[in-house]
Length: 380
Image 1 (cartoon, rainbow, N blue to C red):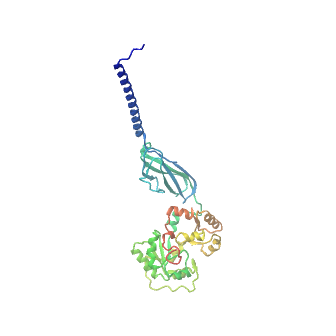
Image 2: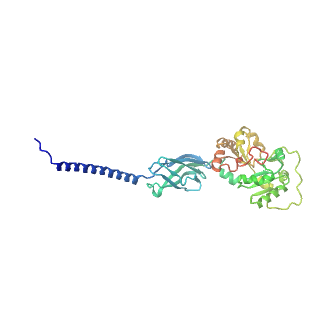
Image 3: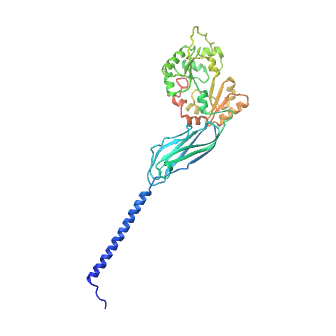
């Protein structure tokens, strides 16, 4: 026979059981709190990217472009505080201040404008709040080989800074249509400053009319407005024809050149025809007519590729000719073949028009002009 448990013993057992339940609950609550604190302690942003882009082999003057994808693989927002390139030849889009939530990504576009031959490694440093990186810096690299473009390859920088000038015909558009200097664009005198403003022209500008007098007045007016590199062709188109006949003229001129005006005083804004003849260059676009009409370098002439051999016979051999297509490949072959044929001052634009746009955007192209559909108005 089992003896009955005293009433006080039952209460003691129940109290101990309740205490144990409370202790267990407290343990789990404390454990959860510790885990939460640990998670908060170790939840950090973390940047991740493929840090090396090997671009292989390119020509001097090519522009290497690559999109690095930056990802936040951490648990807290990643903030990009700044991005720096290690030399002026490398540029990036501005992503400073970008905030990436966990799992988000952003593209950093790096452009390396090649300037010499050899093996190159260009660095781009990305600074963020990733605590795992020294000073928060992640280094991205563009690595590859740049080789010489050969005798005929001309980088865009060299075209712009060594050769480029604007040749502008100020005569009536209908007269321009009849005949003008090869590579000249037609601009009405009253729209000259507007056109130069639109082009943001940072190159010399040579203007001409029939006898040079109106062009000189326009050049002096522009100089007063701050355009320091504007000059008038002495004697105008007549002066050119007296010195060089029909060389570099496109179209037909029925009348002989006029006599040189008497008593013309020397002026620092005058450009001697000899200087223009000694520095004459032509940019020749061998892309399709449709591509040329859509956009081209200001002053470029369009020649079908199959017509180049005939066309070039009319161009004096001391004139510099620079061909371009979309990528530089066909133009390069064309320049090379002309060099083999004995033409010594022919080049192709390295990377073609595509590389010009990558490097310079629409600078010095008809896309900057308002009336880009009329070759005989104020547009090239």
